[in-house]
Amino acid sequence: MSVFLTSLQNVLPIILIIVLGYILRKINWLNETFAGQASKLIMNVALPASIFVAVLKNLSLNQLLQLGPSVLIAAVSFALSYVAGFLVINVFRVQPGRRGLMLNTFANANTIFIGMPLNLALFGEHAVPYFLVYYIMNTISTWAIGIFFIYGDPLPTENDGEKNSAVEHKFNISKLLPPPLIGFLVALVFLVFSIPVPAVLNTGLTYLGNLVTPLSLIYIGIILQETGLSSIRIDRDTAVTLIGKFVIAPLIMVGVITAFTGVFGAQNVLETRTFIIQAAVPALTVLPILANEGKADVKFATNVVATSTVLFAIVIPIVMTIIG
Image 1 (cartoon, rainbow, N blue to C red):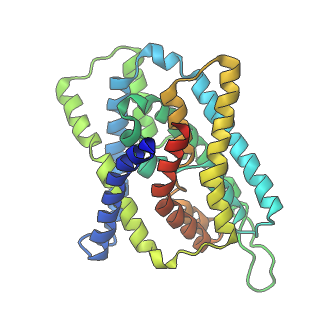
Image 2: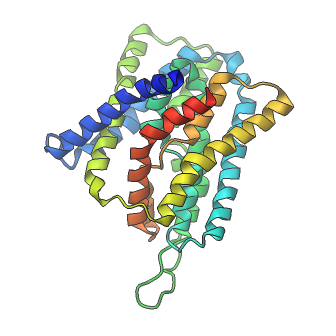
Image 3: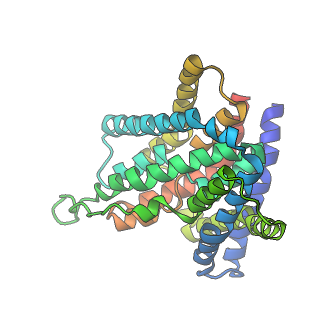
């Protein structure tokens, strides 16, 4: 019970800031353009700065060389999550237009806007290297694999029940190199070659990086308000998707970590906790956008994002209690 209460206390500030964002949008203190502007500021400025500073502060060259098994654990977990998603889709005969979205929710997480603030709240800066491993694998999984499942699974047409033609999607390497990942790679150059960072620059980047958590959570609150909580519906496919996100994906991660522990020995406690928690982080915020572009079920995608974001406040303390 003490672990549950401690986790709840750590999650509560996150919830309060999300609620603040919801209220500020509700009373129109923040207009309809603010969410997009905040997202750009987070993705292109604040988060790259935060990651750059965090890597140089919390990661040594020796630690970097020891992250190989962590990458492998994350990669295997993502692969098995897709496999589990395929099995569930076939067992429950999920309708076209929702299959790709369900697969993405099983495997991929909202690591930027919820995952990072949550990880910092629960585990502090010492867990940042392991979060970055998960973030990189999540980025690759989303933009090199997951997006093709969405674009290849359009809704049936209204006239004849036949599916829309799959949307052609060309591989875009720039999606695999978002600014936060570039910030990580630049930090690695500084780390490997022992390049000193001037104190003035480090302080400025730290200030910018400190914007990530409050802005990200306010952004989530705005998205929830614009989505409309009253529109949330828990139908069968949504329920199955949420079980995949909050139960199956974390269990897969636990299984992979257990298997690797049997082969390579005990894994770092912060690493295992970070990976399990990140596996239970809500669905991608961009899921409805991808659904719209891929002619998939936008309402279903929006519903999954909203419900998973609301439920994570309950799920995370439970997961933390289970993993100790």
